[in-house]
Length: 338
Image (cartoon, rainbow, N blue to C red):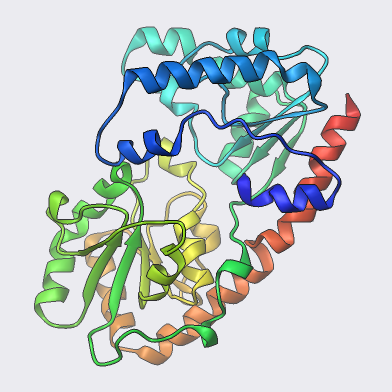
């Protein structure tokens, strides 16, 4: 959401930010650290922000304003005469309606449908999320894919090759919570590493702690693009499950923006982002993953052609330069309709 601020300001929209958690709290999550005091303070700040919503023309909410509390709490705190927009890039509604605890399901399964019905607009990052919103009875739903800012991602020709003498590097970027998707492919990585055909790297996790044969690269906002650009191939394995079908393929878009070919599981929006055989490959089983990785590792020309095709697709469909003006117009319309 933050990357849209310049585009909103260019459209004469004044934005006041009210993040739920602090950067320090979110950083702690990567080390499985949770401070209940930080959570209490975060919710107190958010409640104060919602109580002050009457001074605005529109409230733009990422997913839900008060996670794990019922919809009626949020709706009671929001000003009744101010419309709100909901923004989804994950199927977070499945945290509630598919929860193992029957009490959580009973209390919260209907939360997101209720919020969607009361919204002026639902921004959905892919068709799976959009369909859920429509089924919930949302009045207006717009597809708004996750995008990157081309200004932060140099074109393929501007990127430096880190080490042409070393085997190609297969890389992944993500968080501790999604590192488990790599585990089924550990034997594939080990074989390709042992044969000298590939190197493997992971941005944002302690790969060794997960038993993965990958070099760990720390994540920072300032260095993530350069770190991704040091890869030769970008990967996104996923499980085919309800929550994962709601993912918006952000890491694929980042890889492609850096001119990398990609390999991804054929789940959800991955099947729209990845054009099999054009900008990368879709692979399901470990055997398929090994086959397509070996194909890419053995052919530098193919990697370059697929990387260039991926970059073009990002420029045309998955950049803020394309979606920025559209989103600003949608927000203004949502405010004016009220």
